[in-house]
Length: 455
Image (cartoon, rainbow, N blue to C red; front, side, top):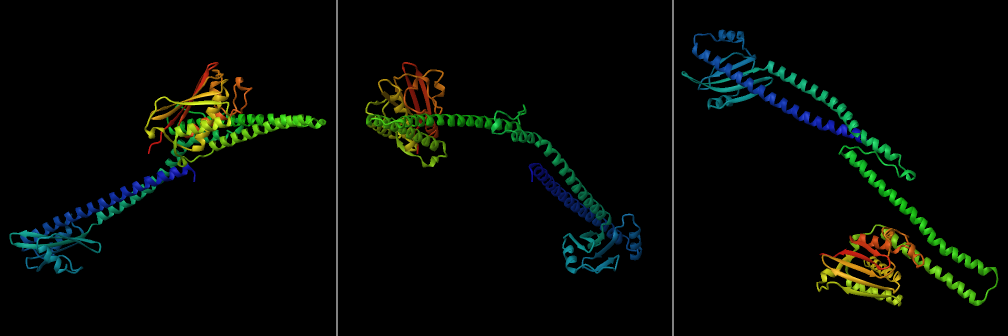
C-alpha cells in the first residue's frame, strides 16, 4: 500500500472513530433524556389522575377511565394502579396486565420511587400524599412518540456516519495526493540521477516544509556522493600510477638485462634496484591496506585507554631504531602528574600509525632529518610535530590530506602520498582534529588534538 492510500485510510479511520464515539454518545444521552422526560410525564399524569380520583369520590371509576382516555394528554397503552396505605388496590384502569409485585408496592409505600420496564411499557411508581392518607401510585405507558423520534435519530446518525465516512475517504485521498505531489516530483527527479550525471540536483522550493528539507537533504547527499566518486576516481588513477611506475621500471631493467649477457656486478646492481622497487610496492600496499581498514566500519567499543606519553616514546624508539639518521626529541609544554590527563581512549595500532607517520614525515622532509614533538595537557591532549624542513606552499596546503597528493617540492623524496590522509582518518575516528601550518623555507607544524579519556 502506497503512502497516499495509507494516509487516506488512516485519516478515514480516525474520523470514523471520532464520529462513532460522538454518535454513540449522542444516541445514549438522547435515549436517557427521552426516558427521563417520559418518566416525568408519567408521574405528572399519575398525580393528576390520583388527585381527581381522591377529590371526586362520587365519580364512577369506569367514567374516570373514559375521561382519562379522551384526554389530549392520554398516553399510549396507559396503565395505572392506585393503592392505599394498607397496600390495597383502590383503582386500576385496565385488566390486560397483572398487578405489580407486592414487593414493589411495599417499597413505594416506604417512600421510594420505582422505575421498571415490562415489555414495551415503561412504569413509574411513587408515593402520593393526600389529606385522606398516603397512597402508592404505579403508572405505565408506551412512549410511541419518543421511540419514533429515537429511531429517527439512530437512522439519521447512521446516515451521517456512513456519508461522512465516504466523504472523508475521498477528501483524505485528495488531500494526501495533493500533499504528496511535491514528494512525487522529488522522487521522479532522483530517479533521473545516475552515476553518469551526479552533477544534477533536485529542485528546492522556498517553502520551509518537510518536502523542501527532504530535497535539500537529497542535494547534500548528492554533493557527498559526487565528492566521494571524484575522490574514488582520483584514488584509482593515482594508485594505478603509483603501481605502474615501479612495475614499468622493473620490466625495463629486466628486458635490458635479457638482451645480452652481463657482468655479475651488473646483475647485482639490477637486482638491487628491482628489490628497492619491490620494497616500495610492499610499502604502498601496506599503506593502502591501512587506509582501507580506517575507511571501513570501526567499532568504537573496541577502544581502550592509552597513555599518550608512553606511546610517543615507543614510536620515537622504533623510528630511530629503523632509521638511525633520524633525530626526534620530545618536550612537555606543561608537565602534569595527573595521570588522567595523559590517557586517551582509542585503538592502539591506529593511533601508533598516525603518530609514526607524522614523525617520519617531519624527519623525511627536513634537511637535518629532525623533528620536535611538543605535548600540551589540558582538557584535551595537544601534540605539535615541528620540523624545519622545506615547508608547504599556500596553494598546496589545503590538499596535503588528500590520498596520493604530493607537492611539487616533494617529487624527489620517496613516498606515496598516503600517510597524511591516513593520519586524518585515524584522528577523526577518535573524535580529534589535525591541523597544519607551514611557511616555505622555514618549516611545518602539524597539530593533533585528542580528547582525554574520562570514566
